[in-house]
Length: 237
Image (cartoon, rainbow, N blue to C red; front, side, top):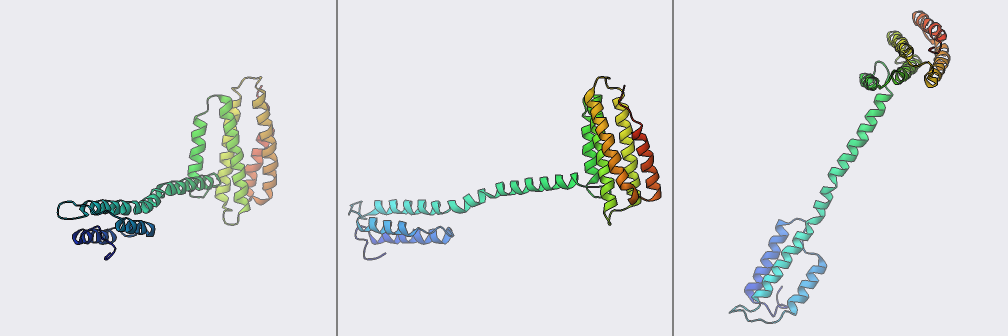
């Protein structure tokens, strides 16, 4: 910055140059912008000659140093703004992961790692039932879910474990019997409960009859006994 600084002493020019060098060394990526350099040059060229003691132009030099400091500080705003976006990105990733885990739990079947979580959630909802009718409705839904799980186990070459199939059939029957017991304590004129039971029996009969050929002999006996049981169900009355 030599010949075009007529209004500033050599000492002041040296101090400004040193300050600019320090800012460039200690603030990575925060050097003054080209437009700021052009503005600085114009201000230095047009700076008035001021008598401040024995050092002309000392006050303008101090002002320019302050401007350079402010310019460098402004250059640091970009990276900080980008860093502030990171927590929101992490939160979004966590939410997506939780949704994916929930779907995996809902679709799990006996033998899967997440299956105990699925059953725990069902038991929690069951314990929150406010009435006998609500409890029976949720138990019928659980029994229907057990039938879906048996169907998936029988249709999968890697999951066709007879032990798991038989255990799931037993849990389906136990849950159905519990639901029917709860329904016997519901008022006689509860048409909704009666309709739910009829639809449940029809769905179970059609679904299980279609799975019988895929079962082994022991599971067939269990499933046939269950079909005989639900066929004999009558609306509570």
